[in-house]
Length: 271
Image (cartoon, rainbow, N blue to C red; front, side, top):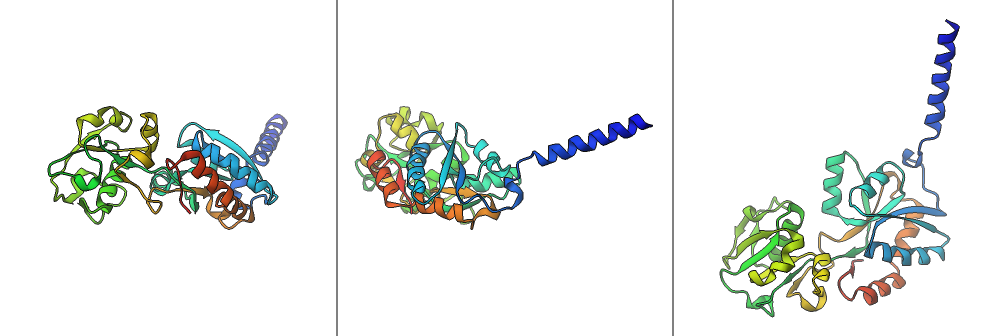
């Protein structure tokens, strides 16, 4: 009986220690206003945040960067308290992540737009678009919808009103130019550009094919696009002083100038 009591006591003690050793950043407490751990994806978001880090130091805020190679882990880490904020995603992606993972992460400030562009080897301007032209677009739901919204904003097609981020070619209700839609894997579209009349290509794939969004596209998303990226935090921290300092540093002239000089229109400041 004494042995049972001793084992029970040890179990409770270990449980208590384990509980005390957990990450309490997601407990609702304000974030440390002197230091933030910020998650980014490798590439432009990382490069930009390195500049933000230097600007934030002038305001007494230290930023520790954690770099990720996928799009899911930075949100999981933020929800679990391993990050204080992240910077890499647009609202449609965030909303889908929250729905799929039962989280409530919130966007707090615009950062940059990686503009999707429409490219063509046949047309020099979107005004030259002919009846029955073949339009290539990504075959995945997020990017396919994004491509269709570019066309709708230009007045080329009209989509069902209740389809915002989930529109597909089946949701087109007006197509006065009788465009023929060819769905392709997003990464492969640049290779097939010569086989269609025009096509929507994501920035990263365009750059990889030697295309400049600013110089080579005949239609380009504007900074007021729904696909602008955001700084994202847990809801209880959205008004924290440290988060305000992060936003101030990101949306500074120093960072804006760096983005414009470094990326030459392939990444656009969106604030």
